[in-house]
Length: 59
Image 1 (cartoon, helix red, strand yellow):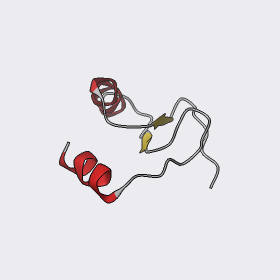
Image 2: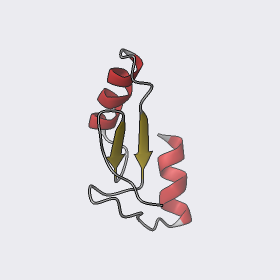
Image 3: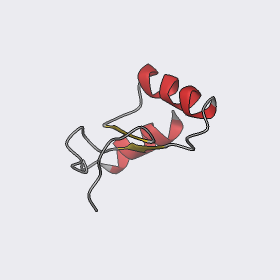
Image 4: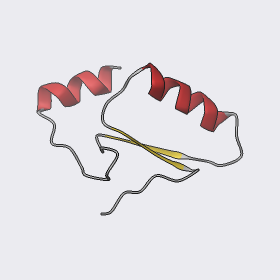
């Protein structure tokens, strides 16, 4: 699958405070946006170990 950012799609390699701000921004808009975690700015899906995935889920 090819991922590309636009006004309703954000790509994030991991969860940071910036992601939390993006979530709030989407909730406050009419865009019904989607944030893909684990995808870099070029649309490449990153490989995560099970341990890394578990940490992301906990956040």
